[in-house]
View 1 (cartoon, rainbow, N blue to C red):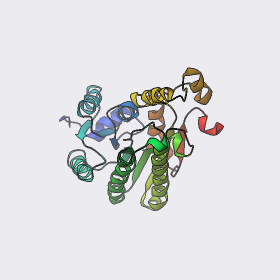
View 2 (view 1 turned 180 degrees about the vertical axis):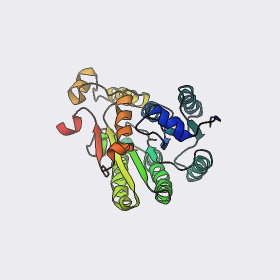
View 3 (view 1 turned 45 degrees about the vertical axis):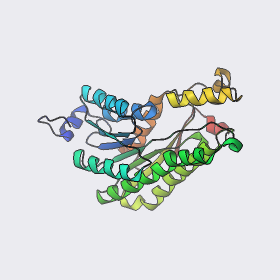
View 4 (view 1 turned 90 degrees about the vertical axis):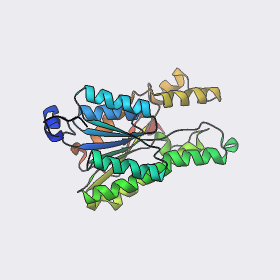
Length: 270
């Protein structure tokens, strides 16, 4: 971490953000919505610890935050691997210290008919989307409980509660992590831990644009007109990041167990 004469609290207070004096851990923070949220957390005064399997991209986010006067560290880790999660969080504890915020964002998607899906497809999505959330949140609730509480935000999806053709495995995993968020909110409320989920629709990230292309190729026709009908326009990653910042901040102090849909009303239309 930068070695200057100011403490993190002093630097954060000078930035006067909504997360001033807080430390945030982000999984999947190297690209897309995770990257946008890492930058937004730093802009709001948080020290940021980024965990991701993408080393070069993660280090670039760390450099951007530092260049803008923020505090950031990057830890390379496959968060679906228990040993790597343990090692990364040990390094977070040694380097960054106790954290107040966890954004569990790491995830992926497979676009394929259910009858063509393989056990390998199932294992991959369960590992990246669900197992990683279990491993990371299990560690976080223990450490947050020991340190007086905190805020956890999990990336779910509009597909957590609505079904979509060609995305059965994805919908299943996102339903699982939404229920994890709700369960954490109930079990750990009295230990000072809040837990919420953000549920985006289509977002303009490499992940989201790939999903649209693959759905189009499979005949689902998510061209501009269909997308406009569903959610008006494609969501920017910074718009999801703004929702995560709110849920992470003390402004959301009485909000827990909620699914915040970042979809321009798509879910409400059913």
